[in-house]
Length: 249
Image (cartoon, rainbow, N blue to C red; front, side, top):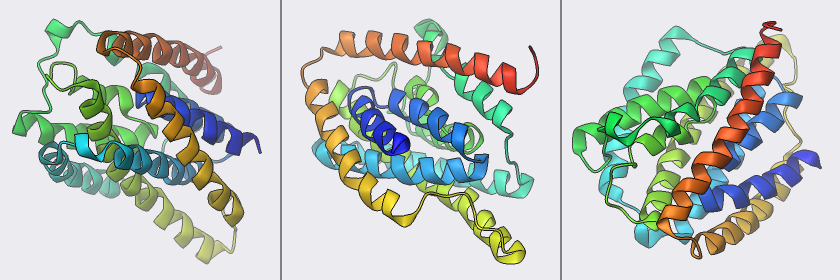
């Protein structure tokens, strides 16, 4: 029930800010599950959240940017499959906690723009790789939208469809080996029962709808400032958690 409640709340947060909800939800489920299982559940839940958000804002999606991002994501997926990289919980939480630093980089240091074709392709490679390592890549994705001239609805809608595709890749990356290992060993993966996913879908849609309604009442400036501070507070908590799991104190 705690995970279902967090799915509802974080879907609402994601509906407003587009990224903070995913950070929070990843931390919650990674506390109760193994890394691979948490990645699969997070990918499944967030894909529903992102697809719902993209559908509600479908008129604002920049499909040209999305297709270029997909083209860049495929090499990243191939490289990590070859490396067979699975992060530990300590590495996972540390990576989650350090992501918000990207939001504090001076805008003059960032010359990335998702509206430029080559930048969009690089965005796909970078964001997909990070999503498969940390489970979340919202702050990294945001770097490619800082200097765009897109309105907040276009930003949230386009980021939502990009993250939907990235989460689907994450499900495949962690889910296929998890199922293969369970077939060989006979060990059942520590995944929620089927009814969890059935119950989660309407809750996520409800939370996402509520979040997008709040988004419509925010200004572009207020949206960016609130996103930066909220994600940063979450990051501090995760850095402390990651350092503890890594035995640094």
